[in-house]
Image (cartoon, rainbow, N blue to C red; front, side, top):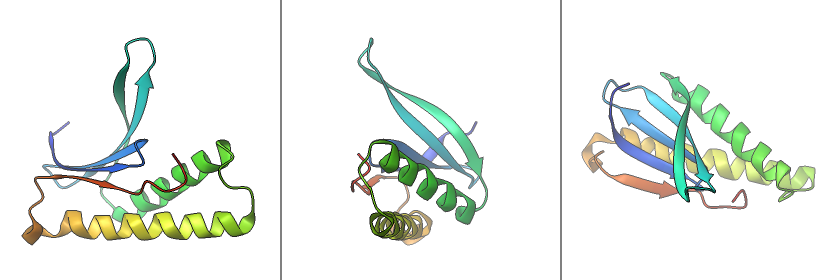
Length: 113
């Protein structure tokens, strides 16, 4: 796998990395309780931002439901819209070549933490 040159962290649970060939990798971050270290596991590689956005929103909403951080349809609707908006904005930043892609960005630290 090519080394990434731009990274976005999502709520300390997921990471999106833009690879040198332009593909996007979705990475899950996990805490190894014994070693007290964060491990990374690649979930998937995407060529299409829309598919990645769909999967990210789905994973973060499922995480919020699992952790009982949302409990109504209204909360689900609000959270889904919020996550999709943050992700779309951040994808725009990652794709903006004029802004310099060599950095690391943190975004979305909403209710799914």
